[in-house]
Length: 225
Image (cartoon, rainbow, N blue to C red; front, side, top):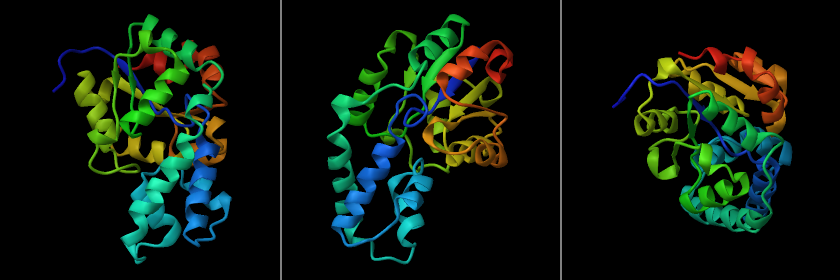
């Protein structure tokens, strides 16, 4: 339950703060190829941001034989894990988090990554001093575009939907936020276009965290709550 009237900013991490979208794309492509599923990378990229269950439904169809889903997820995780030590924050990511914290905002990393992966992402960001709350896949029953991870982020941080803004890089982020009437700022650094993000309902679109930081004083973040 919310514990006070503080304001906050919820942020997706993969593709929003850390440059992982295309690494996930390649990892899923390799995992699917191993299982003789020939899926173009462009289609996989457009699915990144969904949870693995919904991503596989989207790419392979909901009527598929699900017996291999566990092996596909494990294969993806194995391929993606090879990149962990080389993960790189997107331009301005850590500075954006610190600037939001300096404004008195509660900074929440609303990610549905698994806990071990979250640790690698946080190490890449190197901004734990600015972070109040971090979620993981264990906190959500359903993945995006369902809003479960955002609900968990609100509950764990003591914030309310009326006093936060969400920052994400995918259409699925925007859709999930919209289900809770949370304004969503879109970033194109995950490879989704300005038009797609705006068309899904993003209140504003920036190139990357550095661009959002530069315009922070005039953004929805500055007026939240």
